[in-house]
Image (tube, rainbow, N blue to C red):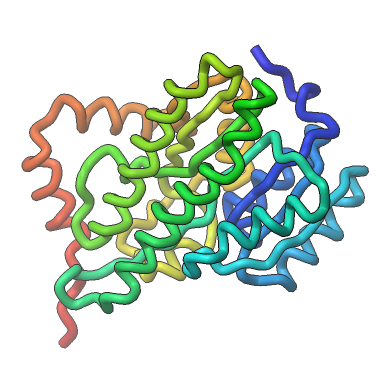
Length: 265
């Protein structure tokens, strides 16, 4: 089993690092001694986080990129390569969501979720994974969701992209295990972050939200242990088991009624 001390001095790349689970994972990795490349669209937030993390005695670099842009993954890779840095820990965390009836949502917002949650995840992994395989050492985390275990009406595209993320992580995990590279899918549930506000998905907010810090700690621990799927809370583990036992149509009908947007009067 890998120990946290094994990360000391190694370089980690965290996408979507400016808020929520991404920034919490960056803090957790810094606490374990990892150096960090932080990337997201919001440079000011990244620089604020970087200033905080260097106080922990680690090296931190900032790369601004919008993963909705198809060229962003290559730009991140080129920026890292130009600095002579070898990434040994890849955290594919950046993600988009959008709540509402699919047939009325903006088409561009639906397609943006696919570009950020799927296309960019594949592109970044494809760029950084070969060196890990060559070195026969590395860790990859793909942040999926408990929404990846079943269809979820009114966040239909988001749930589908997270199912893609989880299956992608599980597939490449099996491919690269023999090269000493560990790949995990982190599947959080309702978490304290700005995600629900940005996605306009308040219907999916629970009363008891898990802290992003706890999600990050459990996720990184699971990654180090080589767990291929990490569901960071007990109710989520129960729910993911339940959806495997119940008919998917029954679950989907229940969620549709519970999550249906309120009609405007």
